[in-house]
Image (tube, rainbow, N blue to C red):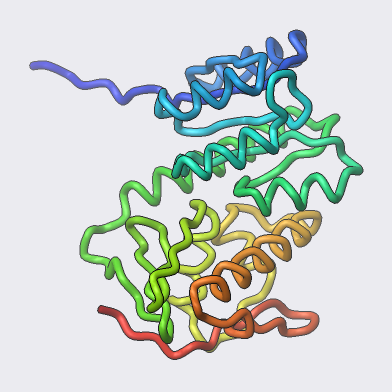
Amino acid sequence: MMTTTTPLPRILLAEDEKHLAKGISYNLEKRGYEVEVAPRGDTALELGSTQGFDLIILDVMMPGLDGFEVCRELRNRQILTPILMLTARHETENRIRGIQLGADDYLGKPFNLDELLARVEALLRRRKWDEQAPPTQPTDHELGSVLFNTNLMTLSGSAGQKVSLTVIEARLLQLFIAESGRTIARTEILKKVWGFNEETQTRTLDNFIMRLRAHLATVGGSADWIESVRGVGYRFSPTFTNL
């Protein structure tokens, strides 16, 4: 009897610090991942665009192209591979910028190795869940004048506007739709969308909410559809219909 083996998850590590790249690669490979290292931003962009990785770990400060430029261009090319950005711990503006450009998560340097591995596992787990979602689930939702396609991860407006969502943005919007009209606590959102509920990640959630509101407004919806509930979380309350 022939047996089939599950291919190892493939990770692109874009990091120009040789010792750090070597250490991260070693520990990822010990966990059963296949790792390719790109020491330059332009190399990372080429590999990330053509090689079909399951996850990209992207340092901000790199030669050739910086991590922001790589992230922006990958999303412009409709590459929706989850991206974990590595940034200096205290550079809040850089973390916000990375998320606004399409990164799915960030980790400040210097970081704890166990935290990096946990974030990698969470991003890969969510990607696997998305790939295994039952085909019977509705793929289109009407949100007022906006159409949300869950398979393509796109928002479309009645005037032809179109926005591509990242994996995290799409999961966040799917959660809001499933719980429409209910106030969802921050901790619940973090656990269901990111896979953890650490208090330190609330800023990440706020940044993604800001970006999702902007996307909805861009395609003719309203940023007000996502309401902030002080001290609790968020509530999503447009009128929508499954197609």
